[in-house]
Structures are given as structure tokens and as C-alpha cells.
Length: 339
Image 1 (tube, rainbow, N blue to C red):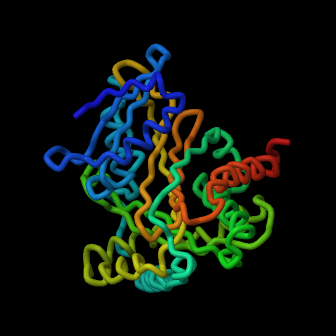
Image 2: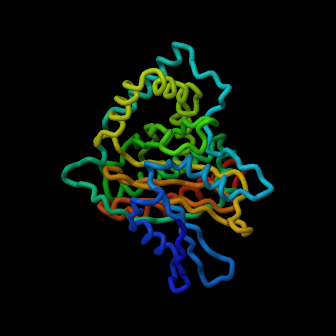
Image 3: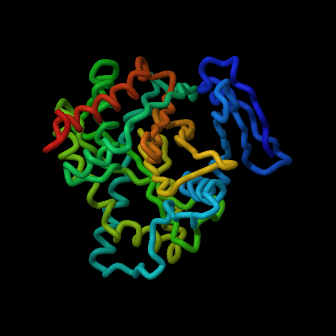
């Protein structure tokens, strides 16, 4: 189903997208909607693809975009695939035990956002923030990090600085953060549904410079980069689904929910009807119980982060700006970076 909306009278097309988010998908149609938002500039428009999370997780949505919008002369890439089918999924027993214990240990409740005296509202601010893709990648390279490390460190810094002013009890030495770990292998690319685990990691909180926070983020995220992490989760899913169900229940408990930071990469060129896609602007979901979710999509020269922020958090609309400022500070202070 395709709808066409003329947005030339709307000075801010982002408001049109926000409005689309509040339109329920029909129950007698596929669980997605494609809307073409045309503006005053010729051959300049937006495609808004909205779907339910139950039908497609973000990794699958990336695959769908790469298949539908790949140029005719390109082979669609597999940006959203996490595992090599030839990879051994049976970690050595000691590594398996250590990794599984680490995963379970990080499901312990923290209660940071479940204070009954300050309940979350379930209503959201929807805000976008752009950043040059090259700046993210250059900063990551300068620190020996990944773009995801840079993103998570900047998000931690933004939340920490906001909390210091508006919610001091959340300004802790360690800020619990959740991030989706993609569990799709090549055979599962494009499959509907959800194939990820919402992992928790405690990132460095407290007052420090963004550059220092990034340096301290690297050892905190290292366990999630170990192949044994995904291998342990896949072993649990395939061999002990009851244990995996218990793990999900612990992860989703109200006292365990926290800020979510995710990142996705679209590697190839995208086009629509012969027109090149200049930017990809995500719209991340934020289920009840989560204070804030952020999804960063890397594509082309300009990458965009989507912020959904609970309206009960005072002054939290500043977090996207603080995130971008932290990224810029990291780039400025990077070894051999911008001055």
C-alpha cells in the first residue's frame, strides 16, 4: 500500500512523519505502510516506511531497504547479517560458561528508571540529530574504537550531563545501557520477526570529558564484541529455549529497563525510481517502561540518529544536542583529530 502526502505547505516535514507515527496500521493489510512525502523542490521527496516491531526488527528493515532500493546494477548488500554460516557456534566449555555467566549477571535489576514517585509517562518526544558519517568513523579510528563505541560513549555522556542537572540519582559511576545484539545469520536475512537480544552493559558515568569517557567505554563493550557472546546466545536459543525465555523475562523486568542505544549500517547505494537516496532517517520505537531509545543509522555522508524520549523526564529534549556536542568534542580531542 502506498499513500501520497504533499508536504509543501508544511515548513517542517518532520512534523508530518510524527503525525504518521500516530496513525494505526490497518488490521486487514500488511504490517507496514509506505508513504511518499513530496515537497516544493522538484524531484525532492521522502519515503516513510513504517512497520510494527513484531513484523520486522531494525536489522530486517535494513535488509528490506537494501533489497527494495538497491540500484539495478548492484547486488544487494548484507549489512544486517551478524554471523558467518561457516563460523563454529560451539564455544569451548570454559568460554561458554564464562560468557553465559556474564550475560546473566548483567540482567540484575538496577531500578534506575522505575521510581514509583517519578513514573514514566509513555508519551514521547521524537527528535532527530544529524552527524557527518566521516566524523564518526574518523573518531572511532583515532581511538581504536568502533562507530558504535563512539555513539554509546556520546549517548552516555549526554544522559550523564542531563542527569547531573535534572535527575541526580541517575548520575552514577556506571550507567546501565541496553543495546540490541543482532543474531541473524545469512540464512535468516530478510526473515520477518525479531532476531536480536537486548544486551545490557554498564558504561562509565560521572563527570569526565567525552574523550575520557570514550576511552573508558572500550573495555566495557569488549565482552559484547567477543564472538563467544553471540555464540552463547545462539546455543541457548537452539539448545535450551526455556533458559533463553527466562533470560528474556529477566531482561524485560521493569527494574531492568534502561536507555537503549543502537546503531545500523547501510553499506550500499540506495535509489528510488532512478533518484539517489541522499539520507536515511530512522524512527526507532520506544516501548513503555523505557526512558529513552536512540537508533543511529550510518549511510552516505550524513548519518542520522532518532531519539524517542519519555516526556516525564524534565529537560530531556536537550539530550540529542548534548549527544552531538559530545561527538564533536571527541573528534576535536582525538589523536591527530580536528583542532
